[in-house]
Image (cartoon, rainbow, N blue to C red; front, side):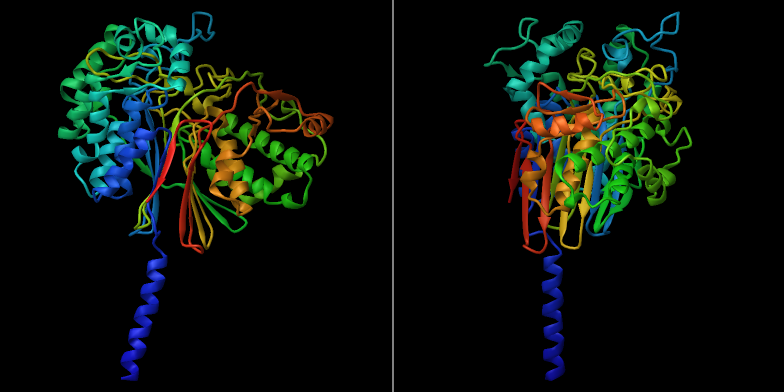
Length: 555
């Protein structure tokens, strides 16, 4: 009897421990309320986090055309609770077979303005449809058609646009007007729509239905593919049927590193995010940041940013095409060498670092969502069509807004792209190559806390993740991560960019005294979507960046 009671007690204890290893609630947080709703609907219908990720990916393609879409790509960082393994699904766009390193240069070898940004020649081969099918077939529980149903409904029935949509439509007006199919969908009488505009996308609904029935083949082959190729080629693009049929989705090992007691799992190449974030954290791990005043702390954070972005410009590109010293760049020893060259009280001018080339800065859009289910499966996904409304081009009859991710290559090594990022030979254009990205979907873990987070923001994505990681290290709430005032340095241009109100006048003066050049932005930036699973408190919380219109739901 005593033995039986002991066994029962051990069983109860082990069952309790097992229960505590599963989140008490599920959560979905995205950049648009309708996308969040689509994800929660799928969870309520018995789907898991991966089914919800398909639903959210498709929904965002409909309701947030400024940031993502079927004509784009992204990185889906997933954690499979049953296997206790994390993977990165690489759905990044690929350069068409006819692409070449000088395709955006004139006869004098200079970059032709806007050629890599507007129109079909700017578009890489999309990866989002392939990623949705893979998530559904390999990890989901529900049919692909069920997970796509909300997106199809939104496309057919339409929805009210928002202020960010209107601003971006005005910003990209000329590119949209140049594509008659895009103008007919996204503009009102060829102008930015008014407040009461209902955005309906019947052609996109039909493309989603083709994917729902045929899987990825419904996009990369058949009638949709014919319309895509015909529309692109008629408008001067270089896509072929071979390009679509040979798109390759790749499942990669994520970047993993350690910052004190925090394990970072983040995006691998062709995302620069995991490597650059690891380098910055490795540098900062050698400083007692919490005991420093704001000026000293900010100075050292900026110097870590500067050096990591310098390495991004010099070394990083598609690791399937070039040799990248990834192990070195993410090592503690390498970071120690970088740290040793940082003056404790004086800025290092970027022109004094190897490889410096003058640059400039812009920066706009992308999207992110985070999901966790009650089994502990989780997804952190960042997707993009690059610039707002991508290339501005829609092949007639498809409803698919094409990306302009070819601008993420180095059109001419040493020349900045639309986000001010300077690249070297490592990121030069080649057929089938994936352009370097800043998208950084990530997980942060300690013994009793798990974070799922990421953000849009172009070249500023990685520094936003850095600041959020430092907040997580201080055991702050999920709201603190997404609300945190932001500053950024990307090596070139050599300036600290900061949000209005992010740095006090006293702090700005202190940084200038140290030799830093300051640039106060006229706008806030980013759109972080984050989830915190606190195992100790047995609670899940989530937050959507107040700078956007997104929503978080916990259930």
